[in-house]
Image (tube, rainbow over all chains, first blue to last red; front, side, top):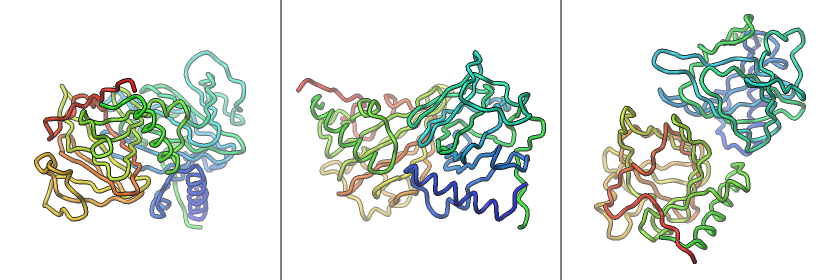
Length: 181
Length: 181
C-alpha cells in the first residue's frame, strides 16, 4: 500500500530520472507512471516505477526506473493460452543494473533483501551498463536491483500481462493499493 | 546503390542525430546503422537510416533517422505464414514527421516526390511531434517524410521481415547495394 502523496512523489522522481537519462516523455505521461510496491508496502526496498509507452495485443514497451537500492522481486512470465509467455529484452539506458537469471551461481555484487533468501533464488549475476541488453525467454525467472545511483532501462517485450506474472515471494500482490493521504 | 564512403558518412550523420535526440547508443552500434536507399540511388530524396536494437522471432525495435527532406517510400507489411504481418508503433523523439496513412485525403503540408504521384497514394496526413505515437495495423499502407530539421523516431513492432515488405513503387528493391568508393 502507498499513499496518493507517495505515488505522486515517486512519479515525479521517476520522471526526473527518465528525462535525465535522455528519454523524451510528455508531461501527460508522468501521471501514468505506475508506482509498484508489489503489495509489500516497502517501496524503497522492493518496488519499481513503470511507464508503459505501448501496449497492444502483440507488443509492450515500457520504461522502468529504479530508485537507489531498490530491488524488483524475482518473478517470471508464464504461458497464457496460446501465448508461450512474455519474451522480454531489457536495455539499460542509465545506471548499473545487477540482473539475476537462471544458471551457475556467480552472485557477488548484489545483496539479498533481508530475511528473503527464499524469494531470490536466481543467483547468476549479469552486471549491465548503459547500452547493454539481455533477452529473457518466457518462463525464465529473474530479478534485478540497483545501487545508490538508481537506473533507467527499457523493457521491450511481447504482450505484457503483468497481473498474471508469478513471483517467488508468496506475499506479493501485483496490484498496488493507493490510499488517500 | 551507395558507395562505402556515403554509407559511413550517413551512419555518422544518423548517429549524431540519434544522440542529439537523447537516445543512448554505443559506438559499436553506429557501424550497424543500415543506410537504406531502396535501390533508387537517391538517398537524400528517398531513403532512411535504421538502427536495429532488438530483433527476435517475436519483436523488433528500431531507431529511425530521417535526414532533412528525406521521404520513406510508401510500403506495407504483408502476412507471412501464420503471422498476419508486422504491427508497428511509431513514436517520434525529435523533429516533425509527416505521416501518410489510409483514410480521407487531408494532404496539406507534405510534398510528393517529383514524378512519383502513383507511388505515394495514401494522402491522409498525420503531423507528428515528439512523444506522438501512431500504430499501424498489418497491411496498412504508409509513407512518411520530414522537412529541413530531419527527425528521429522509434519503431516498436512485432517481428520485422524487411526484405518481404511491399512497396507501391515497382522500382524499389529493399536491399541496398554498397559499392567500393
